[in-house]
Figure 1 (tube, helix red, strand yellow):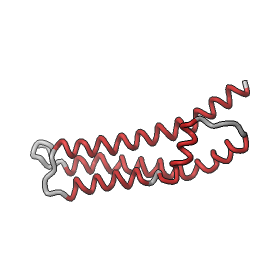
Figure 2: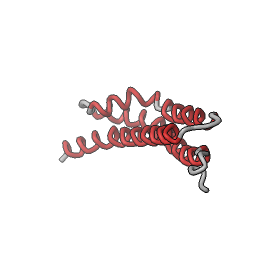
Figure 3: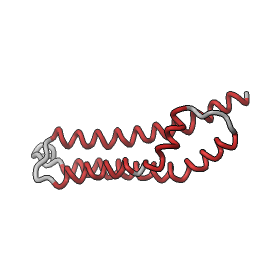
Figure 4: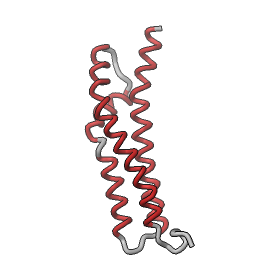
Length: 122
């Protein structure tokens, strides 16, 4: 019998959340390291940044909230004596979606202005 069949989803949740949260922590480190340099670069070039990039610059100091939230959701699942399959799946989906959204947003915030600048240069 697999863990999911006997109702013990905790090992499965843990196996998915550990790399998911590690990915989110990597993204936070990347964002914290690169956003100030990009913000300065964009400022030096002048011009208006796309809304997605402006929002990214406003949000990036708070990006650490995403892995913390994912970890708290995971701890909630792991601390319970019994957890429903729906609850466990929801936590995994939420944590993964948060990581994907942060990754997509950071990528879009970086590359949209770069592509616009390259098109402007011709």
